[in-house]
Amino acid sequence: MKHDPNKHHRRSIRLQGYDYSSPGAYFITICTQNRESLFGDVVDGEMVWNAYGKIVHEEWFRSAEIRAEIELLPDEFVIMPNHIHGIVWIVGSPHTVRPTDGAAVGATGRSPLPSPLPRGPANHSLASLIAGFKSAVAKRINEHRGTPGAPVWQRNYYEHIIGTDESLRHIRRYIAENPLRWHLDRENPRRTGKDDLWNRLFPEPRNAGQI
Image 1 (cartoon, rainbow, N blue to C red):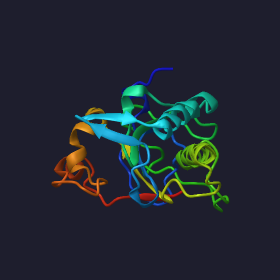
Image 2: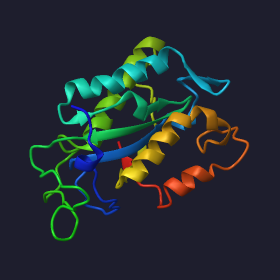
Image 3: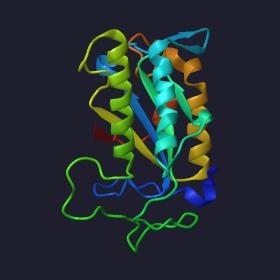
Image 4: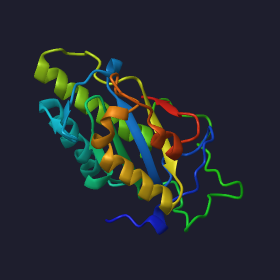
């Protein structure tokens, strides 16, 4: 199923209690533990994966194979030396109603989680996807390097609800050009300048989920 921005996009809402299993597009960033350059290197503006980077790529797209509610596209994902960026499309959920173009869910534009909150990530949610992906990658990398139980990822992750087609276009371009901008990347410990493009795209405070 190919994504349709007019069908799937939601308003950009940064509220506690937002239902992250709602259909929509979500930009996410996940960093390695201590920002370690674990997945390869940027050479002449192109990312060259090592064996661990290949594992990350395989497990990212395997997530869409085992989760019917998730859609992941190759041109909306990039692996960097110490982090990844991707767009996650949640295209269906058993307990949410898909919004129409630009419409919010409910009179307040919010889709609250049921109360009381369940323990751990809710099924079919963004957090559930990320938890499963991070776990699968960590297990395989630790098996490969003989370090069972060692942390591969930092605990939190950054997420941003993509609210408009224009925002989607800009974020897709940011993902595609990330290796070219590695020298300015906010996650690069040896960056030579400031990533003003990130600040323009994501002006709100960083929102971190604890997975």
